[in-house]
Image 1 (cartoon, helix red, strand yellow):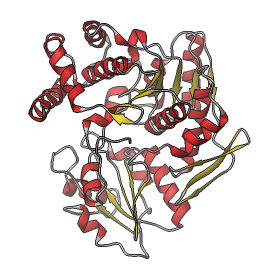
Image 2 (cartoon, helix red, strand yellow):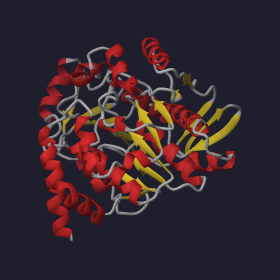
Image 3 (tube, helix red, strand yellow):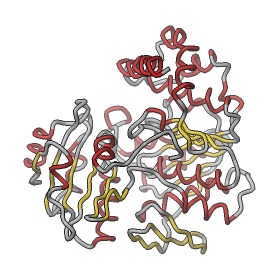
Length: 416
């Protein structure tokens, strides 16, 4: 089975060579060969630039704390592909991935389905087999033409929208917002986090077109961030998160309103328990406390600002930073939030060639007036830290495996 799994998983990843296709036709065709499982499932659909994954994790945890069987589909994964598709927190097993690929590999080739189109169909197929009560679905990229946009959800959720994936979604905030707003469906309510004025206008306009309305959730008036999590007030009720950051309090508030908006009977106690138990690796995650080392996958200006603000709120000083960046990211959109933020800044890359080479990233940062020293590995970074100086590793999902391996965090098949 292991050899079958590795071979079929390689076949699945080879589909990435087909790139990212815009349009839903192939997804509909592949789902049709799978007997259209999405037509018999209930969904909550999320789009946005930052906070999608965390908000999805909060919604998932609340619903599970209410006794429901919940599917969760997110991307990208941190260490193992299986993380993308979960039921009640447990990643899909290798045997089910093999089964799906063996059943539908001929159809995948015939349709020329991309990697994400295939994994989306796999998720819906698996969720129906598991007889879930509801699935929480995160868009992969954009919204309007994202493979997940074949679903009709119980409610749509849009987290803060910012500048990212400009080459595919548009080079201004309005264009990106219009793509994300594509998940808004006719007569389906929309919950949104805080948005810039132009984004808000786009969402309201799209909602009117779809004969629905958007409920914008204001950031909590009061939140306190510590190394033990985040405390905040929402609708005069106090909540505690294990996740850290004012932005996580905002994400949790959006999740609470989304759950309340789908018509399920969810008690306040279940909301509190679900919010507190929710975890989402790689989001201001404490890897070590002696010295403190934080890992955050933030890879755009909005996300990096939030991570660095959280760090300052907790530690009250500049960190030693370790930065990595995917090749296709526009550094020019990020540099402004890196200036004067670090005691010392290092950069690194990966063995798989997905990240910008460390030497190149260092030179580019230097031209923007940001001194950054290339490192070969994480061990070189931690050797600069001591009990008086903590650090933050940030910038990409694609260093997660190296990070977790160095700090001895295991990602097995158990609940995440």
